[in-house]
Amino acid sequence: MDAMLATSYPLTIEGLSVAYEGTPALRDVSWHLGRGTIAAIVGPNGAGKSTLMKAVLGLVAVQSGSVVLFGGGISDNRDRVAYVPQRAGVDWEFPVSALDVVVMGLTRRIGWLRRVRGGHRAAAMNALKAVGLTDKADAPIGALSGGQQQRVFIARALVQDADLYLLDEPFAGVDAATEGVIVDVFRQLKKQGKSIVVIHHDLGTVKHYFDEVLLLANRKVASGPVDETFTDANLVAAYGGRLAVIGPRDAQPSPVPA
Image 1 (spheres, rainbow, N blue to C red):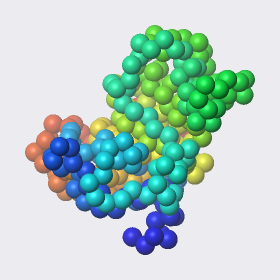
Image 2 (image 1 turned 135 degrees about the vertical axis):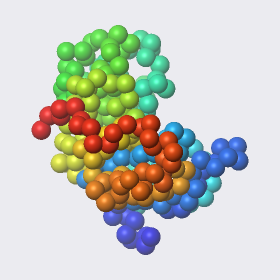
Image 3 (image 1 turned 90 degrees about the vertical axis):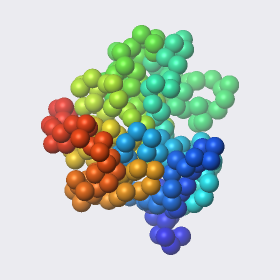
């Protein structure tokens, strides 16, 4: 891709390959994400979805290829990228409140060992309001339900006021109300011109929640607008014989606020 064209995208991946101890996890993946787009990364377990996201964030070594964020590297654009990891990888017993967790999203802005001021807490409360959890601000994070914990981490990302949001399985194990809140947050971010990339497993909601999809099976199977890319042929190419156990793809999603 032309270098000038790459700068017009929030995220551009070219020829990306990643291996763990000699075992390929991603092979020659190229993809670009448009501004103001809600995109899903979809594929079977072990397809390299989390690896791709970690490569974008600079958390795993790249064997070959490149990742460009807003025309530069992650080190130059960390303030423009917010990341929500999988809930399973978080220590929920850490003794902090929901509000404290959201304020942690402002660490780069506040600075290490600097005092958290009223304006920072107000911004964090606004983020909790966006996910419907102002009444849980003082609750210990470990005392919240799984759906509420996920909302807090979404709020922590929101308070960063990023331009690109990366979320690893944000819908995993959450209740219907939380799923609706999360999708509504995505749509509000899209209206602001933000871009969102989501690792997603529920094939039945892809057409309802996302604008674009990247289908992975350790390589790029297909990418593009959902209506054009999320086809039976591409799904069979990605999942093979495992597709039959995924479930219906035309199931109606949980109600989502307009």
